[in-house]
Amino acid sequence: MSINNTVLIIGATSGIGEGLARAIHAQGKNVIAVGRRQDRLRALASELPGLGTSCFDFSDITSLPAAFKDITSKYPDLDTVIVSAAVQGFFDYKDPNSSSPSSIIKEVTTNITAPTVLSQVVVPFFLASNKPCSIIFITSGFSFVPVPFFPVYSATKAALQSFSIALRAQLADTNIQVTTLCPSYVATELDKEFKDKLLALLGGPDKAPPATSLDDFIKDAMIGLDEKKGGKPVNEVAVGAFPQQLQTSWRNAFGPALEMFHVKG
Image 1 (cartoon, one colour):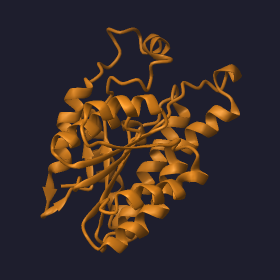
Image 2 (cartoon, one colour; image 1 turned 90 degrees about the vertical axis):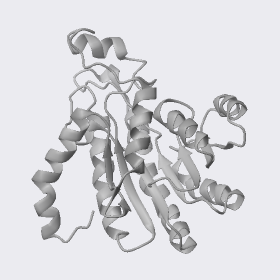
Image 3 (cartoon, one colour; image 1 turned 60 degrees about the horizontal axis):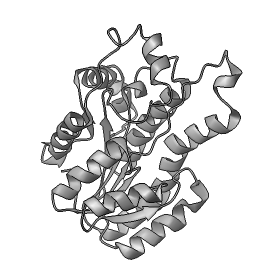
């Protein structure tokens, strides 16, 4: 299983991160929820007895090493990190008012810079533990197919997918498993600020791809994360027919090139 016993979830106060926190907590495992909204962390902790919490902004990358050190001092048995925090902007580069330098930087920092910086401190800690550990990144179908209405988001998720493969290859002969979880379109708060615009762009609610309920996604994601291949946790979990098709197509297209460069990811 990709999820071990003491699990840190970055971005646990809403959406997929919160759903995973609830599901993993229900399995009796130790969960530490991270978010930037203290009120939501308190509310979640009041519902889930024994839940650990840590409040900080994942996009504040200079504070990540200290924040992680503080968490591991309280939870030295930490063996799994799940990165679910993400920002998604509906940017149209023909319309300068649809974005700003700060909003673009925020999205890039949260979605790809912060995960890579966090990994720089997580990996040594996990290696020193000398026990099975996991890093799980939440990616996207847009990791494989960029879309014009999410240009920056698509780019960051493609970068996260690429980073995950490279990191997995680096850690192939260690105690650390690197897994990607690729969701379908899930009904969360991620697109709440521009959902109407998105639906209109896709031809209206009747023509837009239907959103998977969060509960259904989490159920299938937990099953996928529990799977093994050759006695080991799977490297990639795609939930839903479309993400599975994209992931398989990508592997079929680029797998031979990865083998040529002896990439074990």
